[in-house]
Amino acid sequence: MSAGASLPLLKINRIDKSYGDTRILKRCSIDVAAKETIVIVGPSGSGKSTLLRCINLLETVDAGNILFEGRDLARERKNEHLVRQRIGMVFQNFELFSHLSAVENVMLAPMTVLGVSRHDAHDLALGLLTKVRLRERADYFPDQLSGGQQQRVAIARALAMKPKVMLYDEPTSALDPEMVSEVLDVMAELSAEGMTSLVVTHEMGFARRAADKIVFMDAGEVILTETSEQFFNGSTHERARRFLDQILH
Image (cartoon, rainbow, N blue to C red; front, top):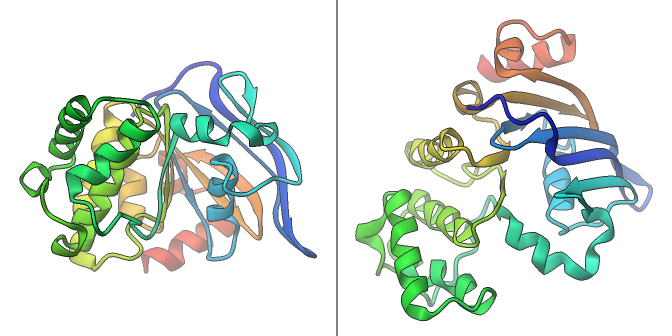
């Protein structure tokens, strides 16, 4: 974990998002410093996943700004592919190409998007599969891998674009309990190495272990932002304390 830089690498400033008459995000603001890990928690339906999808331009915002490296991503629709090179995202479901091996899944984007040679992409992919502890499974196809292994391939695939920020949208929610720790361990190691990360999760052990800050959301709003220590040792907000009591018991 890192104290981060004085200026945020990513600044989410009062963003709103609605689907029809239903307001999903309400003036949400978060500052993310370089090398910082922020874990976003809250009850189901509070807007956590929608917030991540807005950052990665999978959803449009109705108002507000998403500032990254001096650019307002909320106004960058025509350059969304460039944004996604800099901001990687790992989803609940792995979304691997079933007809490609693990190493080929990781190689694909560097070759097709960045123009990396097949040889160099192969070396890069093997290095990343080693990082996520799957070097020996490089030639396995997704249906030959466990859910936890598939999610680690998905993490390696996102890292292959050499992003500045990683977004994780409940990356262990589709996994059997015994597979959760192998994914969280990799994520925690990346955070410890300085990868700037925003993580939506209900895994409080990971949040306590890896987060610099906890963002608590409820009913589409960012209710509070606290250090991990503050949040787990007696949050200043009663709603957050009630949520934590419910999820830990």
